[in-house]
Image 1: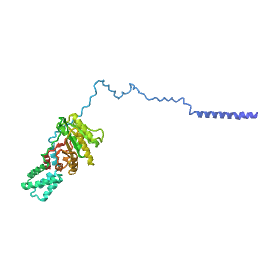
Image 2: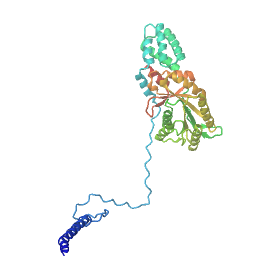
Image 3: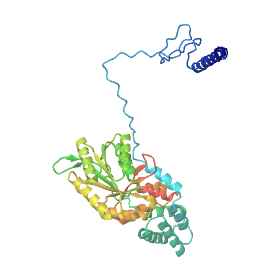
Image 4: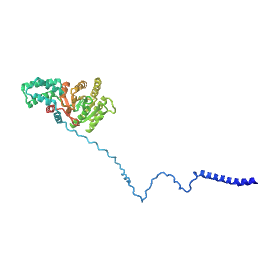
Amino acid sequence: MNELSDILLFGLPALALAGLGYLGVRARRGRGTTPDRTAPRAEPEVPPQDVVTPSTTAPSTTAEPAPEAPATDQPPAEPAPPTLERPEPAAGRMVRLRGRLARSGSPIGVRLLSVLSRDHLSEDDWDEIEETLLLADVGAGPSADLVDRLREQVRVLGVRDVDSVRGLLREQLLELVDPSVDRSLATAPVTLEDGTSHPAVVLVVGVNGTGKTTTVGKFARVLVADGRSVVLGAADTFRAAAADQLQTWGARVGVPTVRSDRDGADPAAVAFDAVHQGLEDGADVVLVDTAGRLQNKAGLMDELGKITRVLSRKTPLSEVLLVLDATTGQNGMNQARVFAEVAGVTGIVLTKLDGTAKGGIVVAVQRELGVPVKLVGLGEGPDDLAPFEPEAFVDGLLEG
């Protein structure tokens, strides 16, 4: 009985305490997972939608789309064609060269006149005259001939005043340049034996860097100014920019350009296509630009020879113009000899003649090649190419 009393006395309180501890542990474990019934429920995320602005808010600044134009059966308007340039007439352009040569201080005009005006001309003076001519790129042979003729005229006439000396020197220089030479350009259509009319075919040759392609473009402007219809042939297929450059020149005056779609194409084939196009169009002139490579003389000969043979199947060549840079002086003579031997040159085009104070290259190249200078470059403008006029050229040299 005593044992039962002890159990009741001490055991029941212990069990009660153990039960309370168990309930506390349950309460602590469930506190993190039991939802809080008093907290507001989170709204589910809804993707944004177009919201209609109520009338009480500020008006929107977004402009309403303009109403569509009513559909019509009219086709869209074509863009206006580009305005073509009108080249200035070629006549009288050499007047500009005369002024530029005078401003350049030509040694022929300044030094020769001063020496020849001296009271007494010694051997040293005549040596100075010859040296001046050589420095002006007149060449050894023409310089010696000019000195000999001046010696004789001065001894016979005894001229010393500036005006008389200027007239004497002008006469002798004109004789060297030779105004009697035919400098006309064969650009009229050709009538063959069968009675058919073909365009004049002008082949333009020269070393790259002399301004050859630019000269072809400027020459096209000269022909257009004279009322000729022209077709350009971009047969310089080894220089990527040559065809683009030539086409740009032609487009400015409404002249078509025949070219290949790929670099390195057969130049003879492009030249042939250009002549064929000229025949179909009834053009007056076909200008053919060619490559200018002198690294291999045999290769150049083969290439130009092939172009000449292929073109001759359609029509004979009217002109073969050699483009030379006047500022290279005597260094350009070697180039001239090679092309004259290979291509059968009929005329010279001297570019950049306004950029040299020498000018004697005109005499040298004519004497060396036996062909006349027909065109000269007067500057960088599109119409700065002119038919060569010996009188205006010599006057420009003497006014330096």
